[in-house]
Amino acid sequence: MSCHALVPFNPLEVGQLIETVWTVVLGCDVRPVSVPTDSQRTTNVLAGIVEITGAWEGVVALECPLEFVRQAAATMFEVEPALLTSDQLEDALGELTNIVGGNFKALLPASAHLGLPAVVKNSVRNHALAGATVLEQLAFETSGFVFVLSILGATSAALARLD
Amino acid sequence: MHVLIVDDSRAMRSILSHILRQLGLEVSEAANGREALDRLQELDQVQLALVDWNMPHMNGLEFVRQVRADSRFDDLRLMMVTTETEASQLVTALEAGANEYVMKPFTKDVVQEKLKLMGLLCDVTVSNA
Image (cartoon, rainbow over all chains, first blue to last red; front, side):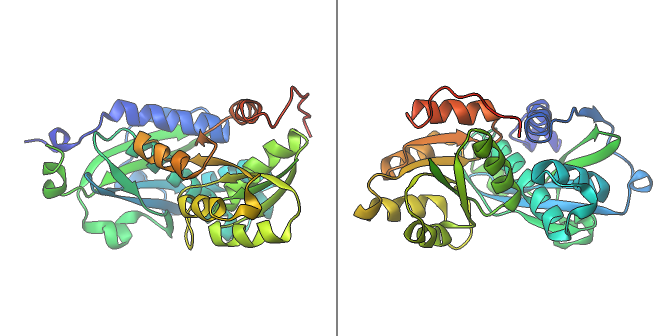
């Protein structure tokens, strides 16, 4: 069975929700692009992470270049990018992750619970989620930056409960 | 009208605050339900609270329940502003005493329309300030 066969959501719908969130919250266009290889990825990133538990269990992670997060936070806080604090950057990415995670949860076929978002420096692969199964990865370009949405870690036991 | 925004995200409070001020409303903020209960006791004449669901310390649903259990806040209107989309959860919030809800992400027009539906806002000219 392929990994995709285990995924209880349609990646196209996930892409559409990213477009909606980016358009409504940030006023930015986004377009899908190929997921960058390790050598193509920028190392200066922040990652927003939110866990979903219940009938489906996994993690939604948004890995964004720091400079994109700065632009997004400037829009959300309506301040000049240079004036933003690191707390404001993390808060803005955390809220974007929360919105994406909540709307992703709505695509799942059964009841689930959304946790509180967390923000970490560098790729999620450098953190505790490094060993998690990647169920889906989608990349998008916005304002010259590429960010990656990863859906991680649902176990077969959790997925089996959806049957 | 005085509105209390209850959300643990400062970015979301900033977005909502900007929209509400454009609509000519006075705004105060709290970072969770517990802080919001304190603010309600300090502030006079808060008519509406916009309440996030998912917050640390005291979540939005618990805040709604505590507000509705306190007769001092009988006139306070409550609108959930949330990523929660499960119908059963939204029904739970409405049964607990929330008057309305808005899904994140939202536009300024959606917030304005919800306030009109609640009878809290007449047709107004939105400033660009």
